[in-house]
Image 1 (spheres, one colour):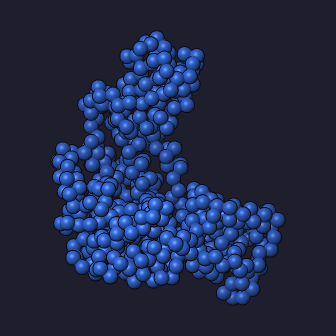
Image 2 (cartoon, one colour; image 1 turned 135 degrees about the vertical axis):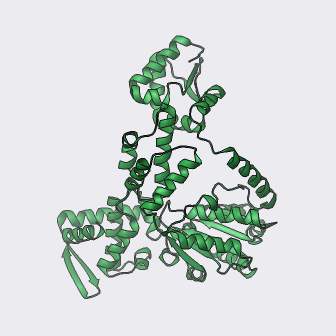
Image 3 (cartoon, one colour; image 1 turned 30 degrees about the vertical axis):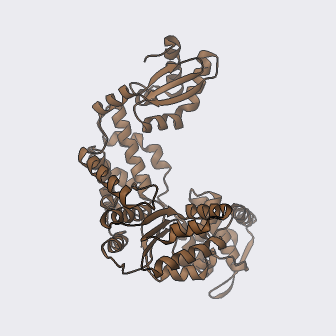
Length: 469
Protein backbone atom coordinates (compact mmCIF):
# COMPACT_ATOMS: atom_id res chain seq x y z
CA UNK A 1 0.00 0.00 0.00
CA UNK A 2 1.30 3.44 -0.95
CA UNK A 3 0.52 6.37 1.30
CA UNK A 4 1.53 9.88 2.29
CA UNK A 5 2.20 8.73 5.85
CA UNK A 6 3.57 5.22 5.22
CA UNK A 7 4.07 4.15 8.84
CA UNK A 8 0.69 5.38 9.98
CA UNK A 9 -1.04 3.73 7.02
CA UNK A 10 0.51 0.39 7.93
CA UNK A 11 -0.57 0.83 11.55
CA UNK A 12 -4.12 1.71 10.48
CA UNK A 13 -4.27 -1.39 8.31
CA UNK A 14 -3.12 -3.61 11.18
CA UNK A 15 -5.62 -1.99 13.54
CA UNK A 16 -8.44 -2.69 11.07
CA UNK A 17 -7.33 -6.32 10.82
CA UNK A 18 -7.40 -6.68 14.60
CA UNK A 19 -10.91 -5.22 14.78
CA UNK A 20 -12.59 -7.22 11.99
CA UNK A 21 -10.48 -10.39 12.06
CA UNK A 22 -7.85 -11.74 9.64
CA UNK A 23 -10.30 -13.61 7.39
CA UNK A 24 -12.52 -10.61 6.61
CA UNK A 25 -9.46 -8.41 6.27
CA UNK A 26 -7.88 -10.81 3.76
CA UNK A 27 -11.05 -10.92 1.67
CA UNK A 28 -12.05 -7.24 1.68
CA UNK A 29 -8.79 -5.30 2.24
CA UNK A 30 -5.73 -7.34 1.27
CA UNK A 31 -4.97 -6.70 -2.43
CA UNK A 32 -8.38 -5.01 -2.77
CA UNK A 33 -7.71 -1.59 -1.23
CA UNK A 34 -5.08 1.12 -1.34
CA UNK A 35 -4.79 3.63 1.54
CA UNK A 36 -3.64 7.24 1.23
CA UNK A 37 -3.43 9.41 4.36
CA UNK A 38 -3.37 13.21 4.51
CA UNK A 39 -3.86 15.75 7.27
CA UNK A 40 -7.66 15.71 6.82
CA UNK A 41 -8.58 12.48 4.99
CA UNK A 42 -8.00 8.77 4.80
CA UNK A 43 -8.60 7.95 1.14
CA UNK A 44 -9.35 4.30 0.38
CA UNK A 45 -8.87 3.22 -3.22
CA UNK A 46 -11.08 0.31 -4.30
CA UNK A 47 -11.41 -1.56 -7.61
CA UNK A 48 -15.15 -0.96 -8.09
CA UNK A 49 -18.27 0.55 -6.52
CA UNK A 50 -19.50 -2.80 -5.19
CA UNK A 51 -16.46 -3.35 -2.99
CA UNK A 52 -16.40 0.29 -1.92
CA UNK A 53 -20.06 0.23 -0.92
CA UNK A 54 -19.63 -3.08 0.92
CA UNK A 55 -16.64 -1.88 2.93
CA UNK A 56 -18.33 1.42 3.73
CA UNK A 57 -21.57 -0.22 4.89
CA UNK A 58 -19.92 -3.02 6.91
CA UNK A 59 -16.59 -1.69 8.22
CA UNK A 60 -16.75 2.12 8.29
CA UNK A 61 -16.98 2.39 12.09
CA UNK A 62 -13.97 0.07 12.56
CA UNK A 63 -11.97 2.06 10.01
CA UNK A 64 -12.75 5.34 11.80
CA UNK A 65 -11.78 3.83 15.16
CA UNK A 66 -8.51 2.54 13.72
CA UNK A 67 -7.68 5.98 12.29
CA UNK A 68 -8.39 7.77 15.57
CA UNK A 69 -6.46 5.23 17.66
CA UNK A 70 -3.45 5.33 15.33
CA UNK A 71 -3.24 9.04 14.52
CA UNK A 72 -4.92 10.50 17.58
CA UNK A 73 -7.12 12.64 15.34
CA UNK A 74 -10.44 12.31 13.56
CA UNK A 75 -10.14 12.21 9.77
CA UNK A 76 -12.79 11.85 7.11
CA UNK A 77 -12.83 8.51 5.28
CA UNK A 78 -13.25 8.83 1.50
CA UNK A 79 -13.66 6.01 -1.04
CA UNK A 80 -12.40 6.37 -4.63
CA UNK A 81 -12.05 4.03 -7.62
CA UNK A 82 -8.39 3.10 -8.10
CA UNK A 83 -7.69 2.32 -11.80
CA UNK A 84 -4.77 -0.03 -11.02
CA UNK A 85 -6.85 -2.05 -8.57
CA UNK A 86 -9.73 -2.15 -11.02
CA UNK A 87 -7.46 -3.54 -13.74
CA UNK A 88 -5.97 -6.05 -11.32
CA UNK A 89 -9.41 -7.34 -10.33
CA UNK A 90 -10.42 -7.76 -13.97
CA UNK A 91 -7.33 -9.92 -14.59
CA UNK A 92 -8.07 -12.11 -11.57
CA UNK A 93 -11.78 -12.77 -11.94
CA UNK A 94 -13.76 -10.86 -14.57
CA UNK A 95 -17.41 -10.64 -13.58
CA UNK A 96 -18.56 -8.11 -16.15
CA UNK A 97 -21.04 -9.11 -18.87
CA UNK A 98 -19.66 -10.33 -22.18
CA UNK A 99 -18.55 -7.91 -24.91
CA UNK A 100 -21.42 -9.07 -27.06
CA UNK A 101 -23.94 -8.10 -24.38
CA UNK A 102 -22.14 -4.81 -23.84
CA UNK A 103 -22.34 -4.00 -27.56
CA UNK A 104 -26.01 -4.91 -27.63
CA UNK A 105 -26.65 -2.67 -24.61
CA UNK A 106 -24.99 0.25 -26.40
CA UNK A 107 -27.22 -0.22 -29.44
CA UNK A 108 -30.28 -0.59 -27.24
CA UNK A 109 -29.48 2.56 -25.27
CA UNK A 110 -28.95 4.59 -28.44
CA UNK A 111 -32.25 3.52 -29.95
CA UNK A 112 -34.18 4.04 -26.72
CA UNK A 113 -32.82 7.52 -26.14
CA UNK A 114 -34.00 8.39 -29.64
CA UNK A 115 -37.52 6.97 -29.29
CA UNK A 116 -38.40 7.60 -25.63
CA UNK A 117 -38.39 11.38 -25.02
CA UNK A 118 -41.07 11.00 -22.36
CA UNK A 119 -38.88 8.82 -20.16
CA UNK A 120 -35.88 10.59 -18.60
CA UNK A 121 -34.49 7.43 -17.04
CA UNK A 122 -34.37 5.45 -20.33
CA UNK A 123 -33.06 2.92 -20.94
CA UNK A 124 -34.46 0.90 -18.07
CA UNK A 125 -32.37 -1.71 -16.35
CA UNK A 126 -34.48 -4.86 -16.80
CA UNK A 127 -35.33 -6.64 -20.06
CA UNK A 128 -37.74 -9.42 -20.90
CA UNK A 129 -35.03 -11.63 -22.40
CA UNK A 130 -33.49 -11.94 -18.93
CA UNK A 131 -36.81 -12.82 -17.27
CA UNK A 132 -36.85 -16.47 -16.18
CA UNK A 133 -40.22 -18.01 -17.03
CA UNK A 134 -41.78 -20.85 -15.04
CA UNK A 135 -45.13 -22.21 -13.97
CA UNK A 136 -45.53 -19.51 -11.32
CA UNK A 137 -45.19 -16.55 -13.68
CA UNK A 138 -45.92 -17.91 -17.16
CA UNK A 139 -49.37 -16.31 -17.46
CA UNK A 140 -48.03 -12.87 -16.47
CA UNK A 141 -45.13 -13.21 -18.93
CA UNK A 142 -47.44 -14.23 -21.79
CA UNK A 143 -49.71 -11.28 -21.00
CA UNK A 144 -46.69 -8.97 -21.18
CA UNK A 145 -45.73 -10.45 -24.55
CA UNK A 146 -49.27 -9.87 -25.83
CA UNK A 147 -49.07 -6.19 -24.86
CA UNK A 148 -45.84 -5.88 -26.83
CA UNK A 149 -46.79 -7.87 -29.91
CA UNK A 150 -50.31 -6.57 -30.50
CA UNK A 151 -50.69 -3.07 -31.92
CA UNK A 152 -54.06 -2.91 -30.13
CA UNK A 153 -53.69 -4.68 -26.79
CA UNK A 154 -56.28 -7.41 -26.09
CA UNK A 155 -56.65 -6.09 -22.55
CA UNK A 156 -56.26 -2.72 -20.89
CA UNK A 157 -55.01 -2.34 -18.26
CA UNK A 158 -52.64 -5.20 -17.56
CA UNK A 159 -52.58 -5.42 -13.76
CA UNK A 160 -49.80 -7.59 -12.27
CA UNK A 161 -49.78 -8.33 -8.55
CA UNK A 162 -47.78 -10.49 -6.16
CA UNK A 163 -45.38 -10.37 -3.23
CA UNK A 164 -42.13 -8.44 -3.19
CA UNK A 165 -39.23 -9.72 -5.27
CA UNK A 166 -41.23 -12.00 -7.59
CA UNK A 167 -40.67 -10.10 -10.84
CA UNK A 168 -43.41 -7.44 -11.17
CA UNK A 169 -40.97 -4.58 -11.75
CA UNK A 170 -38.96 -6.76 -14.14
CA UNK A 171 -42.03 -7.29 -16.33
CA UNK A 172 -43.02 -3.61 -16.30
CA UNK A 173 -39.55 -2.43 -17.27
CA UNK A 174 -39.23 -5.21 -19.83
CA UNK A 175 -42.47 -4.14 -21.50
CA UNK A 176 -41.28 -0.53 -21.69
CA UNK A 177 -37.91 -1.54 -23.15
CA UNK A 178 -39.50 -3.75 -25.81
CA UNK A 179 -42.06 -1.10 -26.77
CA UNK A 180 -39.29 1.48 -27.11
CA UNK A 181 -37.34 -0.82 -29.42
CA UNK A 182 -40.16 -2.21 -31.54
CA UNK A 183 -42.35 0.84 -32.13
CA UNK A 184 -41.03 4.03 -33.70
CA UNK A 185 -41.68 6.52 -32.31
CA UNK A 186 -43.07 5.29 -29.02
CA UNK A 187 -44.09 7.66 -26.25
CA UNK A 188 -43.86 5.75 -23.00
CA UNK A 189 -43.18 6.29 -19.35
CA UNK A 190 -42.30 4.09 -16.39
CA UNK A 191 -42.78 5.60 -12.92
CA UNK A 192 -43.68 4.50 -9.43
CA UNK A 193 -47.00 5.62 -7.99
CA UNK A 194 -45.05 7.60 -5.41
CA UNK A 195 -43.23 9.48 -8.17
CA UNK A 196 -46.56 10.12 -9.90
CA UNK A 197 -47.92 11.55 -6.65
CA UNK A 198 -44.83 13.69 -6.03
CA UNK A 199 -44.97 15.13 -9.54
CA UNK A 200 -48.66 15.89 -9.09
CA UNK A 201 -48.02 17.76 -5.82
CA UNK A 202 -45.17 19.70 -7.43
CA UNK A 203 -47.41 20.62 -10.36
CA UNK A 204 -50.02 21.91 -7.94
CA UNK A 205 -47.51 24.02 -6.05
CA UNK A 206 -45.94 25.49 -9.18
CA UNK A 207 -49.28 25.89 -10.98
CA UNK A 208 -48.18 23.67 -13.85
CA UNK A 209 -51.01 21.13 -13.84
CA UNK A 210 -51.54 21.47 -17.59
CA UNK A 211 -47.91 20.55 -18.23
CA UNK A 212 -48.19 17.60 -15.83
CA UNK A 213 -51.36 16.33 -17.51
CA UNK A 214 -49.98 16.69 -21.02
CA UNK A 215 -46.90 14.76 -20.02
CA UNK A 216 -48.81 11.80 -18.60
CA UNK A 217 -51.86 11.69 -20.85
CA UNK A 218 -50.25 11.84 -24.30
CA UNK A 219 -48.51 8.49 -24.04
CA UNK A 220 -48.65 5.25 -25.99
CA UNK A 221 -47.73 3.33 -22.84
CA UNK A 222 -47.92 4.28 -19.17
CA UNK A 223 -46.41 1.79 -16.70
CA UNK A 224 -46.88 2.53 -13.00
CA UNK A 225 -45.26 0.44 -10.29
CA UNK A 226 -46.58 0.06 -6.71
CA UNK A 227 -49.98 1.50 -7.61
CA UNK A 228 -51.20 0.62 -4.10
CA UNK A 229 -49.31 3.73 -2.94
CA UNK A 230 -52.35 5.76 -4.03
CA UNK A 231 -54.53 4.11 -1.38
CA UNK A 232 -56.06 6.67 1.01
CA UNK A 233 -54.96 9.57 -1.25
CA UNK A 234 -58.27 10.74 -2.68
CA UNK A 235 -57.08 13.74 -4.69
CA UNK A 236 -54.32 11.74 -6.37
CA UNK A 237 -56.72 8.88 -7.09
CA UNK A 238 -59.05 11.33 -8.82
CA UNK A 239 -56.19 12.73 -10.90
CA UNK A 240 -55.00 9.26 -11.88
CA UNK A 241 -58.56 8.23 -12.78
CA UNK A 242 -58.75 11.05 -15.32
CA UNK A 243 -55.30 10.13 -16.65
CA UNK A 244 -56.38 6.50 -16.94
CA UNK A 245 -59.57 7.39 -18.79
CA UNK A 246 -57.77 9.69 -21.24
CA UNK A 247 -55.17 7.06 -22.17
CA UNK A 248 -57.73 4.26 -22.34
CA UNK A 249 -60.13 6.22 -24.57
CA UNK A 250 -57.24 6.99 -26.93
CA UNK A 251 -56.71 3.24 -27.36
CA UNK A 252 -53.31 3.33 -25.65
CA UNK A 253 -51.87 0.94 -23.07
CA UNK A 254 -51.65 1.05 -19.27
CA UNK A 255 -49.65 -1.49 -17.24
CA UNK A 256 -49.80 -1.52 -13.44
CA UNK A 257 -48.13 -3.46 -10.65
CA UNK A 258 -49.13 -3.86 -7.02
CA UNK A 259 -48.48 -6.14 -4.07
CA UNK A 260 -52.23 -6.92 -3.82
CA UNK A 261 -55.24 -7.62 -6.02
CA UNK A 262 -57.19 -4.41 -6.86
CA UNK A 263 -60.07 -5.48 -4.60
CA UNK A 264 -57.65 -6.08 -1.74
CA UNK A 265 -56.11 -2.58 -1.80
CA UNK A 266 -57.80 -0.81 1.08
CA UNK A 267 -59.23 2.70 0.66
CA UNK A 268 -59.00 2.65 -3.13
CA UNK A 269 -62.03 4.27 -4.76
CA UNK A 270 -64.56 1.98 -6.46
CA UNK A 271 -64.11 3.72 -9.81
CA UNK A 272 -60.42 2.86 -9.92
CA UNK A 273 -61.01 -0.70 -8.70
CA UNK A 274 -63.57 -1.20 -11.46
CA UNK A 275 -61.17 0.17 -14.08
CA UNK A 276 -58.39 -2.11 -12.88
CA UNK A 277 -60.42 -5.33 -12.89
CA UNK A 278 -61.91 -4.54 -16.31
CA UNK A 279 -58.61 -5.54 -17.91
CA UNK A 280 -56.28 -8.48 -17.27
CA UNK A 281 -55.48 -9.08 -13.59
CA UNK A 282 -52.76 -11.69 -13.13
CA UNK A 283 -50.83 -12.84 -10.07
CA UNK A 284 -47.17 -13.84 -9.89
CA UNK A 285 -46.40 -16.50 -7.29
CA UNK A 286 -42.99 -16.96 -5.62
CA UNK A 287 -40.69 -19.13 -7.78
CA UNK A 288 -40.62 -22.89 -7.20
CA UNK A 289 -37.41 -24.85 -6.65
CA UNK A 290 -36.62 -25.63 -10.30
CA UNK A 291 -37.27 -22.03 -11.28
CA UNK A 292 -34.98 -20.76 -8.52
CA UNK A 293 -32.23 -23.06 -9.81
CA UNK A 294 -32.66 -21.67 -13.33
CA UNK A 295 -32.51 -18.11 -12.00
CA UNK A 296 -29.24 -18.83 -10.20
CA UNK A 297 -27.70 -20.44 -13.28
CA UNK A 298 -28.76 -17.59 -15.53
CA UNK A 299 -27.43 -14.89 -13.19
CA UNK A 300 -24.14 -16.74 -12.79
CA UNK A 301 -23.83 -17.01 -16.57
CA UNK A 302 -24.49 -13.29 -16.95
CA UNK A 303 -21.55 -12.64 -14.61
CA UNK A 304 -19.32 -15.11 -16.48
CA UNK A 305 -19.05 -17.30 -13.40
CA UNK A 306 -19.14 -21.06 -13.11
CA UNK A 307 -21.16 -22.13 -10.08
CA UNK A 308 -21.31 -25.89 -9.32
CA UNK A 309 -24.73 -27.48 -9.55
CA UNK A 310 -24.69 -28.62 -5.90
CA UNK A 311 -24.09 -24.98 -4.86
CA UNK A 312 -26.96 -23.79 -7.07
CA UNK A 313 -29.29 -26.35 -5.51
CA UNK A 314 -28.11 -25.42 -2.00
CA UNK A 315 -28.95 -21.74 -2.57
CA UNK A 316 -32.29 -22.56 -4.20
CA UNK A 317 -33.27 -24.86 -1.33
CA UNK A 318 -32.37 -22.42 1.42
CA UNK A 319 -33.78 -19.22 -0.12
CA UNK A 320 -37.34 -19.70 -1.33
CA UNK A 321 -39.14 -16.43 -0.66
CA UNK A 322 -38.20 -14.16 -3.57
CA UNK A 323 -35.80 -13.54 -6.42
CA UNK A 324 -34.05 -10.53 -4.87
CA UNK A 325 -32.82 -12.51 -1.87
CA UNK A 326 -31.77 -15.33 -4.19
CA UNK A 327 -29.74 -13.01 -6.41
CA UNK A 328 -28.29 -11.23 -3.38
CA UNK A 329 -27.00 -14.51 -1.98
CA UNK A 330 -25.47 -15.51 -5.33
CA UNK A 331 -23.81 -12.10 -5.77
CA UNK A 332 -22.33 -12.25 -2.28
CA UNK A 333 -20.90 -15.72 -2.92
CA UNK A 334 -19.40 -14.74 -6.29
CA UNK A 335 -17.91 -11.56 -4.85
CA UNK A 336 -16.33 -13.50 -1.99
CA UNK A 337 -14.82 -16.06 -4.37
CA UNK A 338 -13.55 -13.31 -6.67
CA UNK A 339 -11.90 -11.29 -3.92
CA UNK A 340 -10.40 -14.28 -2.13
CA UNK A 341 -9.35 -15.84 -5.47
CA UNK A 342 -10.89 -19.17 -4.51
CA UNK A 343 -12.98 -21.68 -6.41
CA UNK A 344 -16.65 -21.79 -5.43
CA UNK A 345 -17.50 -24.92 -3.45
CA UNK A 346 -20.44 -26.13 -1.38
CA UNK A 347 -18.45 -25.67 1.81
CA UNK A 348 -17.64 -22.08 0.90
CA UNK A 349 -21.30 -21.40 0.11
CA UNK A 350 -22.44 -22.83 3.44
CA UNK A 351 -19.94 -20.69 5.34
CA UNK A 352 -20.31 -17.43 3.40
CA UNK A 353 -24.12 -17.52 3.18
CA UNK A 354 -24.88 -18.73 6.71
CA UNK A 355 -25.83 -15.27 7.98
CA UNK A 356 -27.63 -14.33 4.77
CA UNK A 357 -29.78 -17.46 4.90
CA UNK A 358 -30.60 -16.99 8.58
CA UNK A 359 -32.02 -13.55 7.81
CA UNK A 360 -34.30 -14.68 5.00
CA UNK A 361 -37.98 -15.34 5.60
CA UNK A 362 -38.96 -18.54 3.80
CA UNK A 363 -41.71 -19.63 6.18
CA UNK A 364 -44.51 -17.10 6.65
CA UNK A 365 -45.77 -14.29 4.43
CA UNK A 366 -48.37 -11.69 5.23
CA UNK A 367 -50.76 -13.00 2.57
CA UNK A 368 -50.87 -16.35 4.42
CA UNK A 369 -51.46 -14.56 7.71
CA UNK A 370 -54.30 -12.49 6.27
CA UNK A 371 -55.99 -15.53 4.74
CA UNK A 372 -55.76 -17.52 7.98
CA UNK A 373 -57.09 -14.67 10.11
CA UNK A 374 -59.93 -13.91 7.68
CA UNK A 375 -61.02 -17.56 7.55
CA UNK A 376 -60.82 -17.99 11.31
CA UNK A 377 -62.91 -14.93 12.17
CA UNK A 378 -65.30 -15.31 9.22
CA UNK A 379 -64.45 -12.04 7.47
CA UNK A 380 -63.10 -11.21 4.02
CA UNK A 381 -59.69 -9.85 3.07
CA UNK A 382 -61.47 -6.72 1.92
CA UNK A 383 -62.87 -6.33 5.45
CA UNK A 384 -59.36 -6.52 6.92
CA UNK A 385 -58.18 -3.77 4.57
CA UNK A 386 -61.22 -1.57 5.08
CA UNK A 387 -61.85 1.16 7.65
CA UNK A 388 -64.70 -0.79 9.30
CA UNK A 389 -64.42 -0.89 13.08
CA UNK A 390 -67.04 -3.38 14.28
CA UNK A 391 -65.83 -5.83 16.91
CA UNK A 392 -65.25 -8.85 14.65
CA UNK A 393 -63.34 -7.03 11.93
CA UNK A 394 -61.34 -4.95 14.40
CA UNK A 395 -60.36 -8.06 16.37
CA UNK A 396 -59.38 -9.97 13.23
CA UNK A 397 -57.34 -7.02 11.99
CA UNK A 398 -55.54 -6.70 15.33
CA UNK A 399 -54.56 -10.37 15.35
CA UNK A 400 -53.43 -10.08 11.73
CA UNK A 401 -51.19 -7.12 12.51
CA UNK A 402 -49.80 -8.87 15.59
CA UNK A 403 -48.95 -12.04 13.66
CA UNK A 404 -47.45 -10.06 10.79
CA UNK A 405 -45.15 -8.28 13.19
CA UNK A 406 -44.26 -11.55 14.96
CA UNK A 407 -43.65 -13.79 11.95
CA UNK A 408 -42.43 -11.45 9.21
CA UNK A 409 -39.67 -8.87 8.99
CA UNK A 410 -42.05 -6.10 8.04
CA UNK A 411 -41.94 -2.82 9.97
CA UNK A 412 -45.00 -1.21 11.56
CA UNK A 413 -45.45 1.23 8.64
CA UNK A 414 -45.14 -1.60 6.08
CA UNK A 415 -47.76 -3.70 7.85
CA UNK A 416 -50.10 -0.71 8.07
CA UNK A 417 -49.70 0.05 4.38
CA UNK A 418 -50.41 -3.55 3.35
CA UNK A 419 -53.47 -3.80 5.60
CA UNK A 420 -55.46 -0.97 4.12
CA UNK A 421 -53.19 2.03 4.38
CA UNK A 422 -53.24 2.25 8.20
CA UNK A 423 -50.59 4.33 9.93
CA UNK A 424 -47.87 2.80 12.09
CA UNK A 425 -49.51 3.95 15.33
CA UNK A 426 -52.56 1.82 14.53
CA UNK A 427 -50.34 -1.25 14.10
CA UNK A 428 -48.51 -0.55 17.37
CA UNK A 429 -51.80 -0.23 19.27
CA UNK A 430 -53.09 -3.46 17.69
CA UNK A 431 -49.96 -5.30 18.83
CA UNK A 432 -50.30 -3.97 22.37
CA UNK A 433 -53.98 -4.94 22.43
CA UNK A 434 -53.29 -8.54 21.43
CA UNK A 435 -50.31 -8.82 23.79
CA UNK A 436 -52.55 -7.67 26.65
CA UNK A 437 -55.31 -10.13 25.70
CA UNK A 438 -52.86 -13.03 25.54
CA UNK A 439 -51.08 -12.07 28.75
CA UNK A 440 -54.39 -12.00 30.65
CA UNK A 441 -55.77 -14.88 28.56
CA UNK A 442 -58.92 -12.77 28.29
CA UNK A 443 -62.03 -13.97 26.49
CA UNK A 444 -62.18 -12.96 22.82
CA UNK A 445 -65.68 -12.41 21.42
CA UNK A 446 -66.68 -12.16 17.78
CA UNK A 447 -69.47 -13.05 15.36
CA UNK A 448 -68.38 -15.88 13.09
CA UNK A 449 -70.13 -17.68 10.24
CA UNK A 450 -71.93 -19.87 12.80
CA UNK A 451 -72.99 -17.02 15.08
CA UNK A 452 -71.55 -15.63 18.32
CA UNK A 453 -68.16 -17.07 19.25
CA UNK A 454 -66.06 -16.83 22.41
CA UNK A 455 -62.62 -18.29 23.17
CA UNK A 456 -59.59 -17.57 25.41
CA UNK A 457 -57.03 -15.35 23.70
CA UNK A 458 -54.26 -17.95 24.01
CA UNK A 459 -56.41 -20.56 22.28
CA UNK A 460 -57.23 -18.13 19.48
CA UNK A 461 -53.56 -17.32 18.99
CA UNK A 462 -52.49 -20.98 19.10
CA UNK A 463 -55.05 -21.98 16.48
CA UNK A 464 -54.01 -19.13 14.17
CA UNK A 465 -50.32 -20.00 14.57
CA UNK A 466 -51.00 -23.66 13.83
CA UNK A 467 -52.98 -22.72 10.72
CA UNK A 468 -50.19 -20.50 9.45
CA UNK A 469 -47.50 -23.10 10.20
